[in-house]
Amino acid sequence: MEFAGIITEYDPFHNGHAAQLAAVRRAGARCIAVCMSSGAVQRGGVSIVPESVRVRAALASGADLVLALPAPYACATAEQFAAAGVHLLAALGCDTLAFGAETPDPAPLLQAARLLREEALQPLLRRKLSAGVTYAVARSQAAEELAPGMGDLLRTPNNILGVEYCKAILAQQAPLTPLPLPRWGAAHGGAPGTHNGVAMASASHLRGIPLAQWAPFVPDSALVLYQQARTAGQWLDGRRLETALLALLRAMPPERFATVRGVSEGLEHRLEAAVREAGSLEDLYARLKTKRYPHARLRRLVLDAALQIPGNLPAPPYLQVLGARKEALPRLSRAGLPAGTSLADLAKTGPEARQIAELHSRAVDFSSLCRETIFPMGLAFTAKPVVL
Image (cartoon, rainbow, N blue to C red; front, side, top):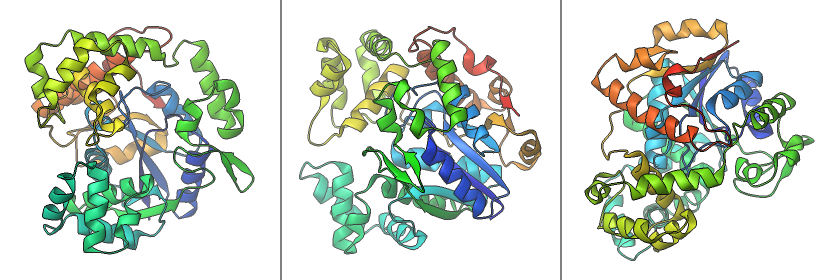
């Protein structure tokens, strides 16, 4: 391992993330690149603090380069999220992909990835889906029938994403070696814990408690950044997000719902009807909810509709650097995609780049409406990178 990559959200950056960066460094990485969600997050929403804050927190704790995972891929399914991140890190020249997993052994994760790519899985998967269960449940049940023991591996959140990373590496023949690391101290979405005497809490736990209670769970340097962001009005305002989302959805022509990514089986009619009646986001999700569609998929569907994310997207066509240490910047000259710090310049490199840059900018403009202080449009094109 010489050049390691991590695909992440840092929403927010916490002690567990700092421990992961340190572990990758101990494993031998001379340079660490982070591919970080930008403009939107995978659960179908907006990050609690803007990109610049999360970038500075990562660089302060050991990252060397931070790339944008553009919004259309950041708010996608686990499969699309993983595929986009692998594509970008491979193009950058990384040789290793580090990630957290409940099973910190690459062999079973790669075995599961190969199994999920087998044609024999598809008829079993369709049969399970016809029973009305979610895709994740159907897939784990089908995998268990083909290879006993695989079902349990595919039921835990970090393993699920880790297997998607491995699938993407295999599908793209990417020159990345998987490096799964244990999740220390606190399970995904679980209660806080400790690791080596350091307090640990998941990002979802932190998002659910006041900033005043974050101190034990985040690096000191990050805490200062979060406090400054709060003072500057950069904190996510849930009420503003709700109003902005509902306003965009109510303004959509009915025929547009059918073109949204993830819409199938008449879901566009259900979405249109729910938008007409819903008095809140939770009400909207409740009206959309069925046994077939988990809450996370519905949140992504709603955000995709509001941002008008189309069903078919190209692979990420450029590498946008959000932040870096100066000594890491020369690595961009060897990248396999157009690379740089200016989104405006990257958008000029081709029609696909222009499409993704415009969709990404739309998401950033939306997120600018969802802060305690409303920020102007165009920040995706005008924001300066963080260079240390």
